[in-house]
Amino acid sequence: MLFCRGVYTDIYSLVDMSKKDPKLNRYTDIECEVCGEIIEGKWDSQVYLGMETGELSTDSIHRWLIYDKHIKCSPSRAQRIVHPKYPTVVDERPQFDWRPEANNAWTEQKRNEFRELYTDAWVRLQERYNPSWEVKLT
Image 1 (cartoon, rainbow, N blue to C red):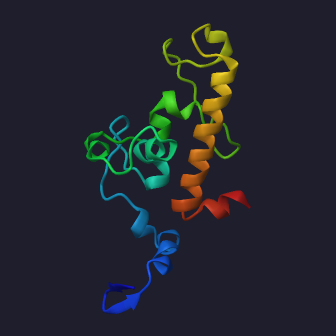
Image 2 (image 1 turned 120 degrees about the horizontal axis):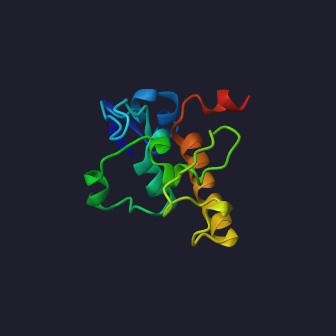
């Protein structure tokens, strides 16, 4: 049991609250390092995407030392998300461009592996934190 605002409750009853109350998801005045606009929530944060993919540790202090930005403002990561509800992003920097015609170190096997990893992680972020995700799917 947990004591919360004068009421005893169990932790499991709080899990779904983040989906219902957008204030629990919302970053507070965190601006994107690239475009300067406010990051709406965890579902649009490249730091949270990194934690979801395992790129960043969820229990380490270093994740708080990284300047956050929108996922779309991190094209090397965003290009790996291939989903009908996510816009196509291309990173044209030669060392990060993973398109087959880029003629670099990306193999088809690695592209598929990273596409699945990043797309699945992005979908989990939407399902967990984005209050309008269900609306977007209908």
